[in-house]
Length: 82
Image 1 (cartoon, rainbow, N blue to C red):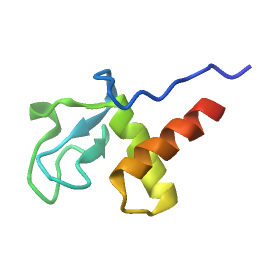
Image 2 (cartoon, rainbow, N blue to C red):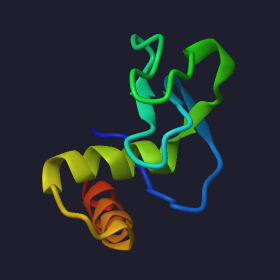
Image 3 (spheres, helix red, strand yellow):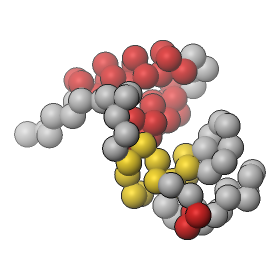
Image 4 (cartoon, rainbow, N blue to C red):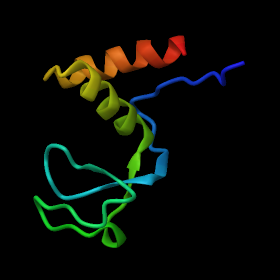
């Protein structure tokens, strides 16, 4: 049985497998990436990424849309079904 998950875009929960750089777009990086080639931020100096933003990012990668509020709405609907 799959674990039930509710995507909450207002959540401040973070995940240690991802981190945020200083870029305004595409700022979420995998833990395996030690440095952002765009802004030069280093993983050890940056915060972990919010879980809600990670799910939105993954959904954007699938959807290729540019409407950010729509990402959150679609991601919320998608992860409620899982």
